[in-house]
Amino acid sequence: MSKGNFLQFSFTFGINTIFVRYKLFSEGFDNTEMHHIEINVKNDNAIPLTKTGYRSEIFPMKKGSILNKQEILEWFYKENGQEQLTLF
Image (cartoon, rainbow, N blue to C red; front, side, top):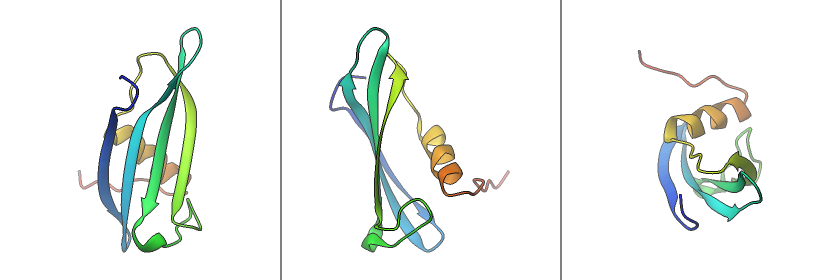
């Protein structure tokens, strides 16, 4: 993943539309790089994850690792204190 590339998607959480951006934030040292997830809730509605409707997380990952949409959704639901509902 090169700096500046990102995964962007939206989904519905309750009555809220959630917008997600994920990208490489900076190349780190050794075998680590910093990744960034941004969460924006439409109309800045509060949810358990954020009272302002916005949250930004920067975290280390093994160099070359990339989160996929499902992993980001799992993190989102865990941070909201809920399990992700599946239809299967």
